[in-house]
Length: 84
Image (cartoon, rainbow, N blue to C red; front, side):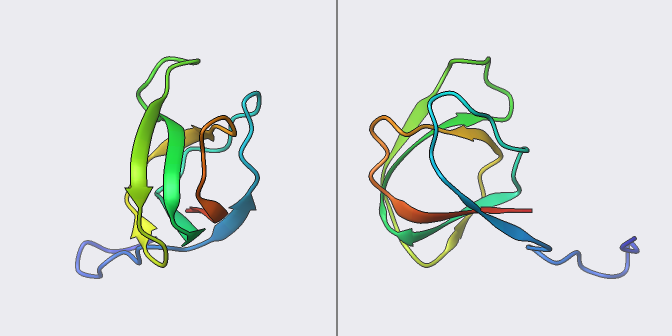
């Protein structure tokens, strides 16, 4: 484990994600977009079925979002990685 004197790395693992209107993912520490665009997600504290749309997110950075679903409908971002 990480000691209180050692900074915890921002990313320990990443997994490619295919957006789905039916399947949840393990809650993330962040989301990386290879191609920027709109991202529709259910955040970690939201009720199942709820979503929020982040418009025009930038590519090439890790967005610090705790996400449990990335919705296919209305998501235009691509090459998405769930960061853990």
